[in-house]
Length: 160
Image 1 (cartoon, rainbow, N blue to C red):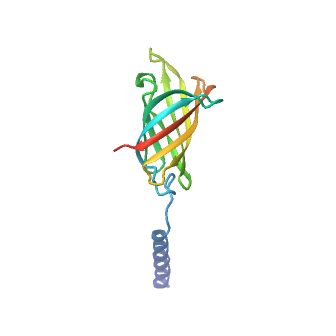
Image 2: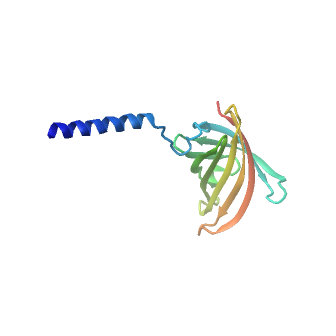
Image 3: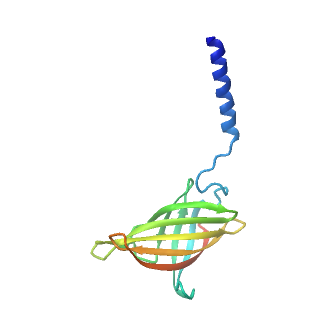
């Protein structure tokens, strides 16, 4: 009886192992092959949400990590007045991705003034070396109350 039980357990274990090896695993952000992964030179353009008119452009550097996390640094606000952005990204479908990140802001004296959450939807070029995106920035006061919503677009190329 013991040998029979061990054979059944061993057979089931072997079957589960083969099944696990043959089944594709999808990690957040990886369903599209992880093609967004890497570091990107990004040109951000702040826009009037009503008209789409350009307000001001500036450069950023964004990294999309394996597993669906992201980091962002920008030249749009001096780094002494804000933290880098930390967030998440995921594959939506085809060449479309969505990302969101949050940073904390401070006044020149170093006092916490609130946070900003950026949310964009990106369209990756078919060669995987460029993307464009559009979305919003939500600015919150230190109590977490939304005080401003802005719009922006980006164009990005892989950092090499």
